[in-house]
Amino acid sequence: MTERTSPNACALRGCIALVVALAATGCAGLKDAYPAAAEAQQRQAAEESANMKAGANIDTQATYLQLVTQMQQEGLWFASLAHIDALEQRWGASPESTRTRAEALRHAGQPLQSEAAYRRLLGTPLAAAGYRGLGLLAGARGDYPEAVRMLKEAQQRNPTDPLLLNDLGYASLRAGLLAEARLPLMQALQLKPDNPQAQANLATYLEATQQREQATALMDANKIPAATRVAIRDAARQIAGSPPAAQTGTDGTLVVGDVSAPLALKASRSTTMPPSSPTPRGTP
Image (cartoon, rainbow, N blue to C red; front, side, top):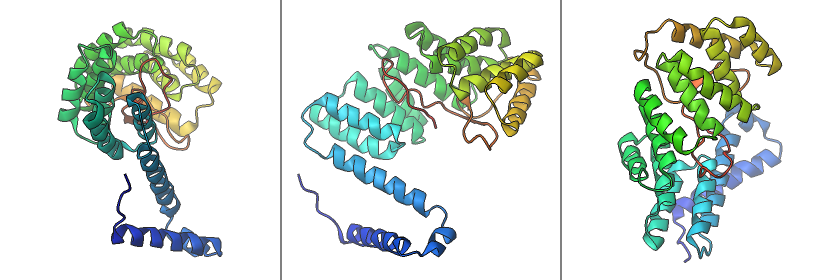
């Protein structure tokens, strides 16, 4: 079906074309004045590309789900919700579409709706994704004991997912359960040794348990920069100085983003793919 293009949309595309043309003729001043312009154009191009793909002749539910998952990997959470609606109108809801909906709602800042969708997964083959999502939501509201409980349920159903183990280890740290954090954090790092989250979380555990030489050796081996080390040590001091189940904070996993920036606490993006598929990462 061909979509009708509105005058506003045409005008917007015309403005973008003008900016691109000016840049091609050497107007570097625009780029300098608007440092976010290139990023905004890239994001719009990604959205338009995803919408074109999703609007193509899709003849199977699996193909549409794959395209929705790709949109979510690119961070197009709001756009993916629209396509999940279209998918379910055509083929009906399934555990896979419910999982993608729950993920999109969580990233779109709709925790109550996201929780309801995750709970619908608990009696399905994707129960591990449901429990994991509930754990991340609990962490987002600072309820780390509940996050540990939900993530343990997920881990029992999907015991070899390194990012799930990493989430469980971090939630255990934040809940004051340092002894329980060691095993999942070690498993996460050995299963995915190049994951910066796993490296940072294990270093945090070692710092919090006064194993500073081992923490330094781990950070040296993985070339963790100075600003990140400061953040790891600050987090370890907070964890070590807090009573069990009393600490609050933002959601999810201790994540290393830009190596020049300190650590940030935010939710893992590791549930944007089915458990049997490799995870892109979320984050975030």
